[in-house]
Amino acid sequence: MKILVVKLGAMGDVLRTTPLLTAFKRLHPDCHITWVVEKSSWVVLQKNSRIDSLLIYSPETLKTLSRESFDLAVNLDKEDEALDTLMSVRATQKRGFGRSKEGKLAPLDADSDYAYRLGIDDELKFRQNKKTYQEISFEQLGLRFGGEEYIFPLENADKAFADAHLKNLGVDLDSARPRIGLNTGSGPRFAGKKLPVASYARLAEKIYAQTGQAALLLGGDTEAQRNLEIQALSKAPVINTGSHSIGKFAGIVSACDVVISGDTIAMHVAIAMKVPVVAFFASTCAAEIELYGRGKKIVSPIACAPCYKRLCPIDEQCMKDMTVEEIFDATRPFIKDRVSS
Image 1 (cartoon, rainbow, N blue to C red):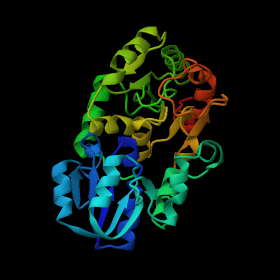
Image 2 (cartoon, one colour):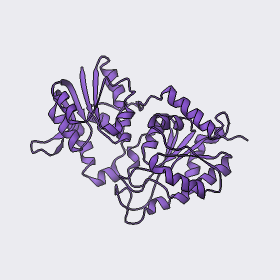
Image 3 (spheres, helix red, strand yellow):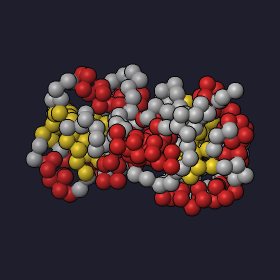
Image 4 (cartoon, rainbow, N blue to C red):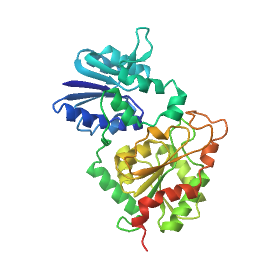
């Protein structure tokens, strides 16, 4: 059986779609899976052994696909590029999102109607929905989500780099004291995903006072300056882990006992590494995130959340309202056995 998966981005969305691969391989052990993804998200799939052919979205890729035919073609994105990709390929069965006869975004079958309505009905998405993304995406394919995990293999080289890097920074990987990662930023797509710099500094101080361990500041290039500011502001020692490739970053995350993060790629990487996550939410919907029983969600009670706004008209008050005490208390169940007496 030949299966095409169209899931272009973003990186976190791509990662949380990988549980479907387990279901496909279980139902059709000899199936051949082709996945089309954006270049920016390709890296999180490149080592995935359950993908037989990984293609980067481009005009050339569309030409390649036009010469093939599939038994099943699945699109879980609503962007024009993904819709056009699915509609242009030959497949015995197409599922997920496509285009209507009028050329507009439409569910291709009744199983995708709920996922479609989530995009046009704020009351359903923001208030009523209790399903995770995995439950929704599995339902789009007529399947039942059974706790299938993310697939993001951690390479031995990346793990070895992370261990050596952390040791060079002064982290004692053999210590009984817990290692708590603070992911301090977020992408620019939505507001309300990162705490103020001062809150991270106070949180680092709280971590050190309660555990005797310096917090690990996590992030990428966009968090570099922010992490320097947190490091300068904190009265307690912190360890700035720097910016690295996504594989090396996953290695560093895997060394943590718990990661504190907004709804970001770091949260998804921690989920993939099976590291407990304390995740805070305001602008996006907490219900759609599957933590696999390894984490805690802190949801802003502010009246305007969730909003999915790129720019906040009230200066991200939701993030200012998140208290250090509430966040640290949420980590306690995941570190209680790692605090030395």
